[in-house]
Length: 135
Image 1: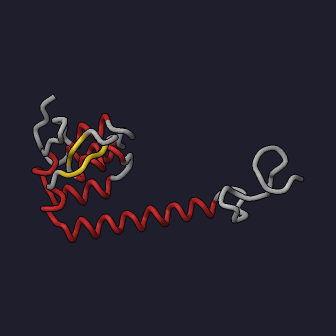
Image 2: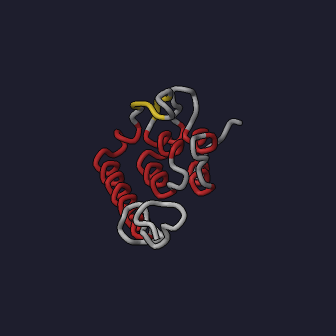
Image 3: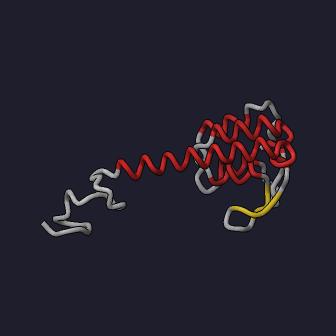
């Protein structure tokens, strides 16, 4: 058997992290742990910043050409972030959901047409706030 590397004959060598896990289980666990830590940090930032933080239009996302709220950015780039979207809506309410970004779109537009096409749960959270939607 060849030592190290990938490809034919390298079975049993380990995953990409070199930790001996043939199935990459260690890497997945580490990734999940980091994702959970990032989510907890984001929740803390949201709690500390409150409504002023979530309502502020700032920065850019979507390749640098849109300016919007954190809800716009999450809806655009996070496929399955129902808990984050729900937290943001809890803090900012209907007013946050209706904010338009620099391109004139709401977070619902971003969820439907963004980079990762959000999950049904994210889209539902955005429309369950009982608002009228102009199509």
